[in-house]
Image (cartoon, rainbow, N blue to C red; front, side, top):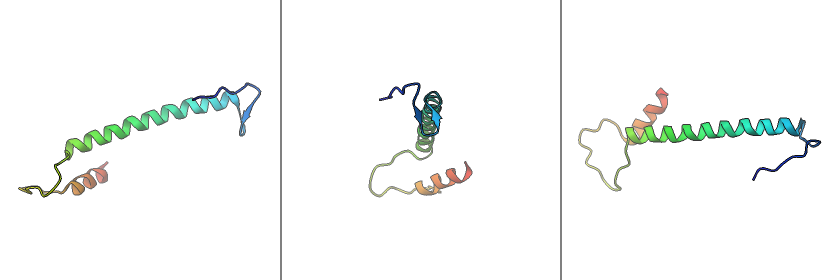
Length: 76
């Protein structure tokens, strides 16, 4: 859990206040990255939904799952 730093303390080369500011900003960044990762996963699953295990009837598929997702990552 977050620890409270006494005002006279320094953390590394910064004041306790500046340290708390940095921590707050980094938490926002981590939250945004997490949301981004879930969004990427959701869109990838839309392009290539999960399939049952085992051989699949290939039908007229143009791409394998790997091909589709690599294509997506190259474009983005």
